Image (tube, rainbow, N blue to C red; front, side, top):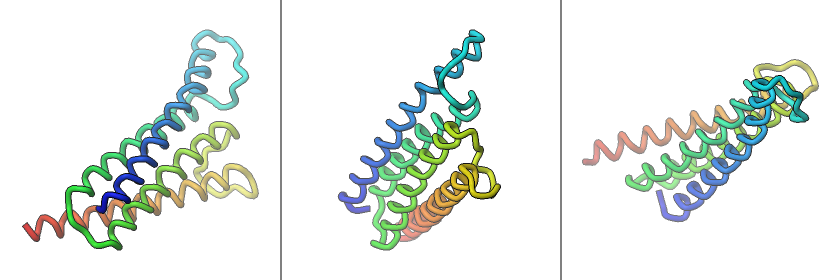
Length: 149
């Protein structure tokens, strides 16, 4: 992957990682409230905030790791763009949808009408498409590099 796309993917990965860190604050608030039995002004439950926190952290790390791996092998410009855009879409949509799900009480697991749950579902689906496209492109590039020796 060329240096510009590698740098941009690392930067986006770090920002998604930071978004995951920020989601740790409401996560800690709902965990603390659940443990102590106190009320909290933070909407959502422990499960939702746990997911939001992990979506940001794990997607950010994935983006940074994939950038490092992709920088090690030669690949076509098309594969570079699929990997870059697939991971950027996956990282940001997953962190946005999981945080919105926690804030709105939805799970984003299906279409349920004109509501936040349906919106989050659509956003999550965009992320899945991006993640799968990037993984396939990275696998293709890796296999081609291995075959070339």
